[in-house]
Image (tube, rainbow, N blue to C red; front, top):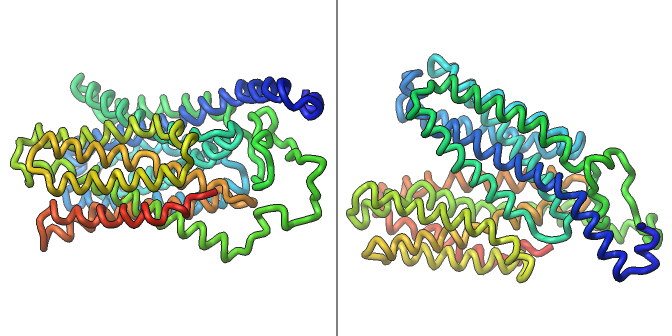
Length: 427
């Protein structure tokens, strides 16, 4: 079939492409499942925070330190996962990391005091960081194999998993289940899901920029050598992007990381401060203020489901540029709004604008070529994740000197800067 496709590039190539898509569907579904499972298990911990802190006697201030500990160990997991995925393959690392997350999600429920809770959260955070990098590396492989943007949909499934986890957690708590029982069941479900999805993930190949998408076949091709066009001169390293200098590559990775930092900073600010801003600035009730976060998260999830199709039409640079401009406009609306409906519109604009940018950045980082795709992605992840942590904290510090609404000028200006430098995301 491959030989015939070369001789008759028209109809037969289309048939071959359709066959390839069918072969890759299980891999795509497996990566969807990995993102969903990760969001689900993380949400199961979050919804049980009040019960677990009451049980362990942890104060709100101590919990804040523990959340930073979880984030710190997640960053360590991300940094170590990149080189590990390049060495042993992202499929193997997904299996290990997903299993670790499924087991360690039970740790906080079994904690009996601050020390044991800190240890449990450190282990859980490390596993989540490793899973973040390994499953996004898989997403890059599958996206490359499909030959069209699908990264944003994977991130949408993470949001969907988090929503499902919050519903399940709320239902089990209402039914009187203890955190130990609920998180044990969640962990078992995670292990079962891992066992089912891992065999369908794409096999490990060291990516080369000049290779065609068909180089990334299904798990059945594990260990198969990479295919090259017979017309490609293998002894001419200048034709491979991996021949770029280390300095250029590092500069690209850092630039992508800075853009990710800005967008995730804005996302963190919107997620953590939207409800409080609506209550303080407009004087509305807590239930009405909660609608601000609802508007943001709803359009964020919807935008991620739509972003792939839009990216395929206008490209990743336009997604980042116009999305950042929309987010900046949203922050401007929130700052100037005197009415709740207008504020909700502003937060909805922020969610929609920020939805597609980060997946495009991660996809670009994973497609820089060479043999260190996962390492490159882990570096971008680390820098970006720091923005997610720094954003809410920065706004908190600023509120000691200026009103919360005025402090939102920071993400507004930064998203404008992101729009101006969006060309960094070009591939």
